[in-house]
Image 1 (tube, rainbow, N blue to C red):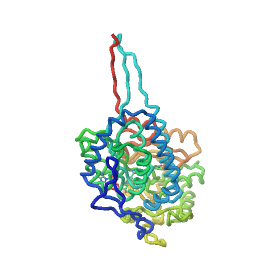
Image 2 (cartoon, rainbow, N blue to C red; image 1 turned 180 degrees about the vertical axis):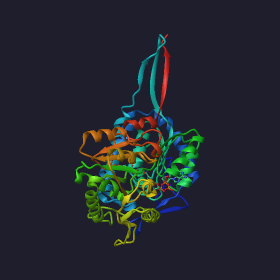
Image 3 (cartoon, rainbow, N blue to C red; image 1 turned 135 degrees about the horizontal axis):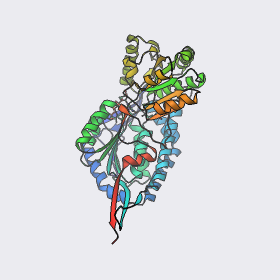
Image 4 (cartoon, rainbow, N blue to C red; image 1 turned 180 degrees about the horizontal axis):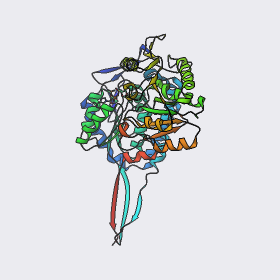
Length: 476
Ligand SMILES: NC(=O)C1=CN([C@@H]2O[C@H](COP(=O)(O)OP(=O)(O)OC[C@H]3O[C@@H](n4cnc5c(N)ncnc54)[C@H](OP(=O)(O)O)[C@@H]3O)[C@@H](O)[C@H]2O)C=CC1
Ligand SMILES: O=C(O)CCC(=O)C(=O)O
């Protein structure tokens, strides 16, 4: 059994989760401890006890730890990437890339640990100096999803540790393996006991206990909208600081003046890579009438030719859906889109060489933005194609959503690109690029129903992971 890491000790559990490969369910990756509310209690108390020491340590110590983690991730990228592809289902190339991205995030925050700074300000009163500094928030709880099982833990954990916080982390039950390796790496890199605690287990048990625990000061969550909303309400009862990254229904606008090849490639990547299991996926393709038919013809041909299969096979472009439950969800949306009047291309369940959760990429042609299949996040390899007359209509449709994470436009018009960047109601805007696939050193997050609280990643992460103190001193 792979154990939880609590107060520097590996602790087993009476119950376990079977971590199985979604492209071959006979492949049991391992048994992982299923923690309890009692484990959360021990972890939170250990994190509380470790906080003063970690907050006070030289930033060089924190920087060195994060740099060591980065180096170990890089050295083991092939092995960890293979585990990640086995447990989550993205292709080996994507999984390796995600591991390297996690390493880069640790390296970035190793640097940030040394750059924590404040302000010295003249008081409006004579003889008084004012200093504004940043301190750790305290004990932070990190609740992470299955779709980026090492990058998302990394982009929460690295800033948390860099800024002097201590951590209780709960990865998704579907993909505990990558987070467990990260815990092993932190342990071998010398993280002090209690500074980092891993409690694997069910969200409704472990996650819930974290949100309610009085010793946890802040919660950073990535996952679904219903869980995120409920969690924020509960956390508010305890006056915890909260950061939520949730869903998207991200629009990609294709204008008549777009380079057709660029547009098809951006939409193919944005909608279907990583099996569409990205909150930044391009799930609404909003296409101007003049280019619509040529675009649809090419995107249909390319998307239906994507090779779906085992992610460890170098020829595979699209891996499996993560679970039977997620696949059933996707298939139900395919049927819904058909019932709503869209022309459905692909989307059926596929048989692989092994028993798994394979699905052909789906296009919902002649869709409207009013359809439920165009409004609700599916989180699978499905994209609606919505025809519009002009730029203004495209922009209106793009912004007509309860979400606001990422958006994109394919155009060769500088004016339209600039106008879209300015008026898009999204946290991240892409021009001639897929809506998914972001840099690791700049802010990540959205608006409206997609995100809540401060931005993640880059130096903006300091806003969530630090508390500001204003100190006044009378020099006499
Ligand atoms: N924005 C994004 O990046 C993601 C969005 N999603 C969306 O969510 C849908 C469902 O995916 P799913 O993985 O079930 O998402 P969830 O929101 O259920 O899971 C995200 C994390 O929250 C945990 N969790 C679940 N319930 C609670 C709770 N009551 N209190 C505290 N933590 C909890 C989960 O634990 P556990 O899973 O271990 O029970 C997991 O670690 C997807 O179809 C997609 O639409 C999903 C993943 C990522
Ligand atoms: O698009 C990306 O690079 C990140 C996507 C992401 O964070 C998510 O899907 O949760």
